[in-house]
Length: 357
Image (cartoon, rainbow, N blue to C red; front, side, top):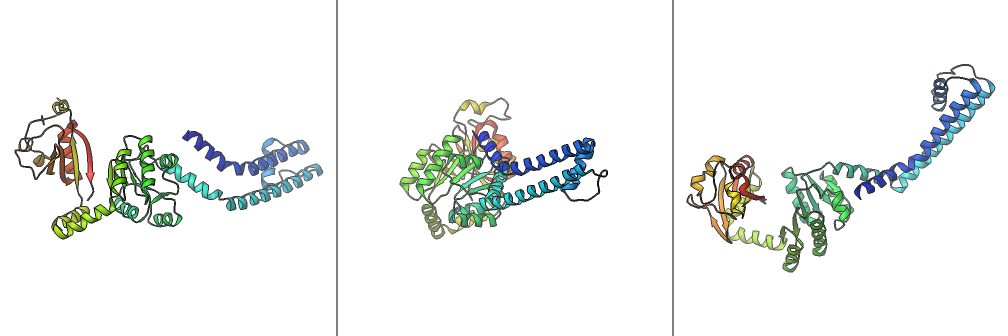
């Protein structure tokens, strides 16, 4: 379906030029044939004479022309003028019809086809702009979908790739590279629109990580039912930050410092299947062994901040804390340290998620 659509767009772009190109080809062929008949030249000399006549280069005649040959030359000049006039009119008409805008859109979509592991941001309002700014600081490839021309202009000024289209349409999400992206963020101002985006994205690519904005608890529950991986309410999140500023300012300052550093917090979800924790290819067995025995911190340089197990959170776990299937490890470290930590766990890890700073 997408290939047929791409072919249709290509035909739409090339169609306006078929007339002038066909007319020019007809003039060149007819002129060459005329010289061939009247002067008896070979095809190379005939074509050369036609080209220097149409282009008005004026290198001179291949050979003195006979009266019929001069008539052919006059007809070529007139035909060339007609073709030039036709081309000028066509260019002026294309400019008024928005052809060059469609051409830029076509080139932009072709460029997006080569994009992988990027983030799709639906909506470039106040919240969308903050999200985009954070992703830009982290050098994450980003494609913005926005319908409002003014917001699109702002995103263009900020150096973002912007697709001006309706994010609730399947076609738009596919154009933005949903099949190749690492995650999608639905940050539209309307809960209904965000719900449509999540439903469409979940249907088109069930394994995609989907983050949605919600303005109410009811909308948040519906978005989760629709398949959103994470649902964030700006008002709830803002209230928690303000409360944390009043009660735990040091913790909030730590998170702000973390956001501006090379360190990250990642969540390592251990497999629920115990058989994965005894893979013979691993250098160590994980199940039932303590953090001190595994020496994950010493060997990787990363720090285990907390462990979530059966709904309970173990903060600052001690060295005697034992590993078990289904645990969620919250780990702090640089990208290199976290990569080493992941390699030590091997296939015991089901999923890895980076927590926002």
